[in-house]
Length: 424
Figure 1 (cartoon, helix red, strand yellow):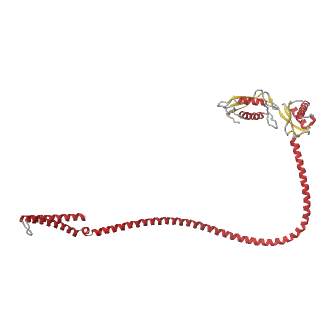
Figure 2 (cartoon, rainbow, N blue to C red):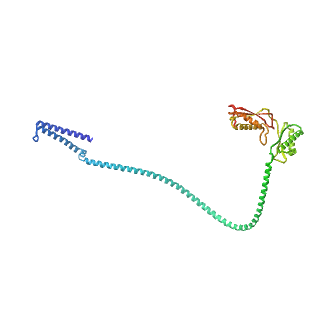
């Protein structure tokens, strides 16, 4: 606003001076005045020049009087330039100082943060140390209490120790007296030890001999069937007794074959009351009875064969061609060993089924039937072509009673998708 006012003053002043100069020049021209003996035209020129000088001088004078800035621009420019340079240098220095101060401030902030972290760490350590101090104080208190208790106990034990020392002195005297007796007992003990070692050697030799006798030359194992047969029931006792005697003779022949020498029925010992009880039981039974002559214990070669009788009711368990069991196997029968494994599993199932139906198993092997090697491998060869599964079915080859043995016909068929799967 100040600059606009200044311009307006200068314009008005310049216009006023120009108007005055113009009027003055016109009057001088009209009157044809002459200054310093000059022509009017030259005087008019001089007046115009003087008027222009006055305009410039007046303008500068007015501006100088009115504006401090103009005075500074006209008379203090060099001083102003020096001041500006000094101010600029001071500003640069101040900015550098500010940057340095900012850097120092950042360093101080980082140091303050580190100090705060260290303080927190020290406070945490102080808390832990205070807790440890409390624990140690409590432990010290407990130790003091334990120390007091131990001191009292020590005093008590010291008193007992004095008493025991007295008793020990008396025992020392008795110990010297017993030492002589101990020496004599030691000599006796040495002699007894030698005799004990001798007896142990003899016992071991007898045990080894007994093991050799009992295990190394066993003819029949306990429970093994020597002979078996079916005797008709519901008959006269004399007829039954004759049949049982015949069965005992068969047992004698079987023993002769087993040991490789001739045996008579006197070599097979059957408890007589047991024999008579069996005769009476069979004679009164409405059914035929299966009779087994079994070894009553492990029978050693050269000794008398001791046997017992086992009686079972007899009946026809399976009719000829009667179905027994079928199983499906979802396996490749052509793979090595697969067919044999499946057939063995199947025969095990047949054995369990036959026993559950009433066929008597072999006491030693637990089997109820026989299958020849040729028949076994014939079935294996018939399984081999079936690569995606097969069904095995067992049928009784002939009428089979409880005595057995069960002889089989095994059928091999293709397994369809609805057949249940069994893995051996």
